[in-house]
Image (cartoon, rainbow, N blue to C red):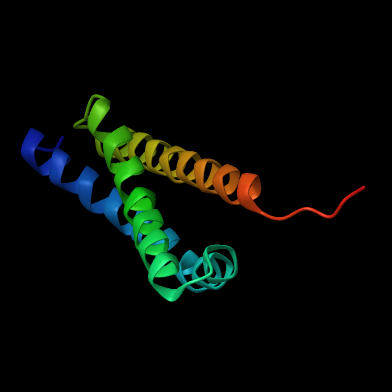
Amino acid sequence: MLLPIAALLLTYALTAVIAILAAVALWRPLSILLAELCGTEERSRFWTVWSMVMMIATPMLLVSMRYVATDPTALVQGTVTSALFGVLLALVGMGFAVWSRSPRGEA
């Protein structure tokens, strides 16, 4: 059994690692895509940074809303599940935003 504060800190640390890994993996491809869509470097940089903040904040928010288990196995399982679901939600939101603003060829 973990102390509640240790469980909470472990939850946030594990979530931050998962979210930051996802953000780092997407930084370059998203930056290139947004440069094409936004037209200027300043706009592209802003939306890339905003997207990365959302990629990290969404999992942290979801993990914060759930009960923190003190059993190590339940803690890791619940944290990873919530963190990955948060990353997925952020990706769906960004994907929809990019898709809705992408130029389409006329059919």
